[in-house]
Each structure stands twice: as C-alpha cells, then as structure tokens.
Image (cartoon, rainbow, N blue to C red; front, top):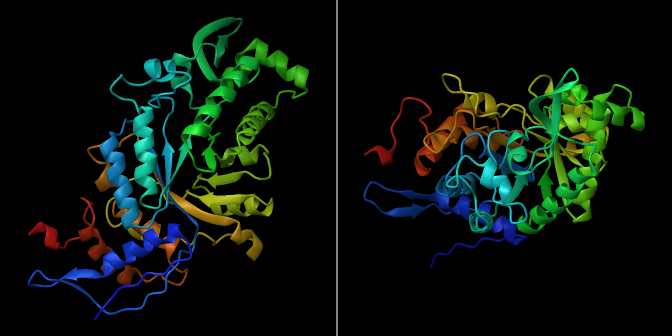
Amino acid sequence: RTSTVLYSRSLSWIFPGLETFSQMVHEDDYGSFLVNESFIYDFPRFAHRGILLDTSRHYLPLKSILTNLDAMAFNKFNVLHWHIVDDQSFPYQSMYFPELSNKGAYSYNHIYTPTDVRLVIEYARLRGIRVIPEFDTPGHTQSWGKGQKDLLTPCYNGEQPSGSFGPINPIWNSTYDFMNKFFKEISSVFPDDYIHLGGDEVSFDCWKSNPDVKDFMKEQGFGIDYAKLESYYIQKILDIVSSYNKGYMVWQEVFDNKLKPDTVVEVWMANNYAHELSSVTQAGFTAILAAPWYLDYISYGQDWKKYYSVEPRNFPGSEKQKKLLIGGEACLWGEFVDATNLTPRLWPRASAVGERLWSSSNVTDLQDAYKRLSNHRCRMLSPTPLLKAHSQRDI
C-alpha cells in the first residue's frame, strides 16, 4: 500500500506543499500519471513573495486577476500587491465615496465592485495568498480629484490658478477627514494586516506655486523644504491607518523623507538599490526588494536569467540588517499591459523570481534552472516560450 503524507506547522504552508506534490506528478507515454517515491523537506527562504498588478493604467478584468492568482499559486507566491488605482483611473468602487469610481474610472464597466473585491480576496485566500491593496498618495492621484472635490492642490501660474491640479492638498483639514473615512473603509474591506500607502514620485512644483501652501510652509517652519511638507502629510496618513490597527508599507522615497519606525519600506529604484537597502536596514526598517524585478521592462532573449541571478541580500550590512529584508516582489506595471498580454508578459519570467525568493541562496545553477523552468512552463497557463523547444501541450 502506498500513501502520501504532507506535514506542515501551519495551514498557510499546506498550499505550497500541495503545489510541490503536484509538481511530482508526471504523465508517461501511455497516459498514466505517476509519482516517484520521495521524501521532500522544503521551506521558503523569504516570507514575502509578491506579484504587483497595476489595474489603473489598464483595467484588468476579474477573470485575468483570478487566472494570475492561479499562476501565483503554481509558483509559490503568497502576496498579491494590488496597485488598484493611480493617476489614470480609479476602478475601486468605494462604499463611502462612490463618486470616486463613478467619475474616476474609465467607465461604469471598468470598476471593481465590493463583490468583485471580496471574490479576489477569497480566491487568493484559498490559494494561500494575501491581498495587500495599494492606495498611492499624495502623488499619482489625478483620478481621485475627479470624484472628490477640493482634494487636490490647485496649481498657480503666477498669481492666478492655472486650471490644473497637483498632488493631494496636505494643508486642509478636509483632506484628513476624507482620508480618515476612506481608510476606515479600506481597513474593513481588506483583511490583511497591511495597507500599501505608496508615497513615490511626488512632484513639488504645484505645491511651490500655490500661495496657500507657501503660507502654510512658513507657519510650520518648513522654509522651502517641500520634502518636509510631504513628510507632514505622510505622518498623518500613517497615524490614520495605525488607528485602524493596520500596518503600512511605502515606497522608498518616504524613507528618504523620514517616517515611523514600524513602516515596511519597498525599494524600487534600480539605480544603486543595494546602497538603498543598506541604508533602510541600517536605520532599522523592514524592507522588501522590487528594484531588479520590474517585469514590464521587456528585452529580447532570455531575460529570466537576470531575474534569477539576483541575490537579494547582496548589499552592505550586518547579518541583523540582512534579516530585515523579508522578501521581494515582481512588478508588472500597466502602461503596456492589459488582459491580452498579462499572462505571457508575466510568466514564466516571474517564475524565476519565485524560485529566487523561495529557494536557498546556493541554488543558482542557470542550466539546471533552465531545465526545470522549461518543464514548469508546460504546466502553467499560457506562458511565453523560454527558447526553442516544445511542450507536450503543443501536440
């Protein structure tokens, strides 16, 4: 009599264990499914193994998101970083502020209803995947202003309003009243312990042009250092989110402008990211690495190799610092990605990132990885080819 037994210390580890078992099953030439007798002791190197999907630049249908969650489970990713809104559109349908999507989404057909969001969260949960939403402010918020009056900063041309708007206005009490109610909703809708608050790529030009903002800067003693104004805003948002018993993640610029010590910092700038990781962890912050894994950057050939060859902890610092790096994310930004090319653009390139975040640091042989990745590709959804070869699925 034969049997298969899977032992795990927690329910969350059952899912990758089942995935390992499924990869042991192979089909012989006669159509029989076989499993080699084996004993496997396996565990992930990093706790946070994420995929970022951007549903603002191009709306992704619900089916595409769910299909990607299946692929994530195949590759033992355990975090969906849902960059759900941005400048271009606001597809999240808020219960408290329905005008945000009514006026900020591309159309009424391009929204995620509360039912849709619950489905994504539950579908992910059943595959051992957390869903961390990102609501990026104070920049990347043009779509917010369409449905929430007086939220954005009016820009000026000399002494007159120019008619355009910049980042969220950090000087008005109404801003924080809105954010308090909005994040109260988000905290109840998304059950994860964390919310990603963004904070990247904030242009100060509009703030600098606005006379009310300049007066506020003087009152606060900020001088002409608008990074202090951004920090002022971020600290208030962190306080709001913390009041709902949520942790927070931010992009690295927020660390550069000072922040609360319990914040998780995501390093995304490719230029000298090792130095940034060193600085972030030396300051005692928990870190996540995304910089070398921007999968929306397309190049000819086997670019999976450069993703696979990254050593996340190869940065200056002590062992204590390196333990503060808890994982990484493969990011697929949506400027040139929609439902037609999401799967082949992401897989199996992200599989290389998945193994780097799961396997031991000494698992680095590219030839060995290629053989396994080729076989793994044939098990997946409709991923792009690695090189000239064939798959049983082609027959």
